[in-house]
Image (tube, rainbow, N blue to C red; front, side, top):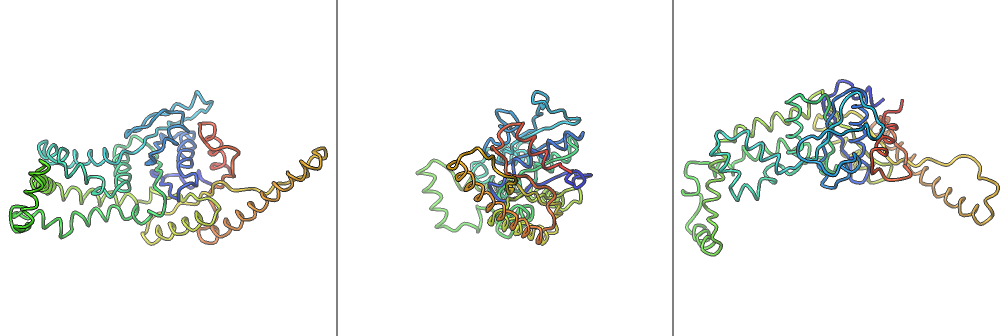
Length: 354
């Protein structure tokens, strides 16, 4: 079912709460589509090295890196690439593209105000993640891009990131700073100027000059940022983009999934399907007759606990089904955590099972 769901898509965004196997799912989806002949890049913004380790790599950078699956016995007709987003570097690259000239570019990148505020101005990781997707989508190197996102209680932040950036650049506060009077005019009163002078004498930092240079340089890029934010927002709404909500059959992740689905619908974003990870399955069959009384009692107690977990999970899946529809894929609780390519391949088998 997942294969048909992703047919014709260029971008897959995996969203969900923390601890539900979202990063693993994103990598396994990318692996499965690469096996089917596509050139796929998976992008993570998780600072932990789970994705790199599970792909057999020491580290990932801000540019896609080709993953060789053949040493692991996996034959792919396409290619699997992976990268870990560096939000600061991605925003720096955006400055480099939008700056009207080299002098402006260098002024902004070297400015102390920019260096401290660039992540916040970028809308933190959410905007830079989508901006990186936009960049990768534009160069057409890949048939499919798979994004692993922050935990879904940031859902509104993630979906609203392009609009928030636009509001920042079109806001009255920024327009005030960009007026010709600037910081040398009516914006700063005498008392404020004295404070800046004292700070300069004490710290050796001309904060007033840094602020003036920052906003003056930024002024020439406002229209470029606004246009880029609009294009990035349109990317989220494009029919070739789809969201996979990844969850686990426990109360809190289920509520997170329903919450995110509601936000997607309200924002007019394309919901593709639901992936349920770590489903407990009730045991079947009689116990061997030669276990002995003590061991039989312990095994029966463990099986009773497992049956209770399976019953709880089944009820939570029904809650999800009622709110979001049938899951596109279900992955059972595995014996071990996924930490290598073989583990990813096992998850991929469940994701792409008929």
